[in-house]
Length: 164
Image (cartoon, rainbow, N blue to C red):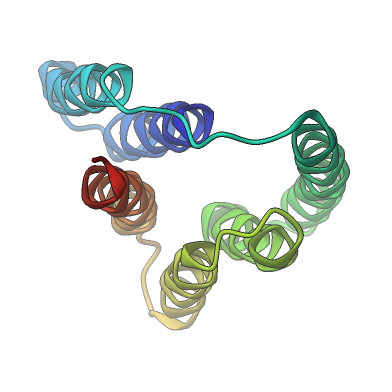
């Protein structure tokens, strides 16, 4: 699960940094996601990875690659279409929804039920942003980051409970 913490942490940092930059907030605010990322990475370094046999690792890698590829393709197509039709404000919410949707098959295929909650949070955050009257890129980015960092925290807590 250490690799999951790293991946979630990296993307949470990207979401938060994007929210800060797109919103025009002072760049000094970038210190916040960087500090959270460093703290999360440090905690992940002390997290004992769950033992898996090579077959489980290969199956997990295959599932992550497959659904990550589908996610990336969907993001590229949807973002291009939204920009083409002038719906720039809908790009971040749509990406949040797509990222959330990609967690649903991962929850089952790699055996991490927590990802269902991660998916639900991202889908809801994106959907709410789509129906708000004003564009809210900061709200989407910060919500997505908080959801991903919360998933990291949940994995870490679960890992700590499982330690002897």
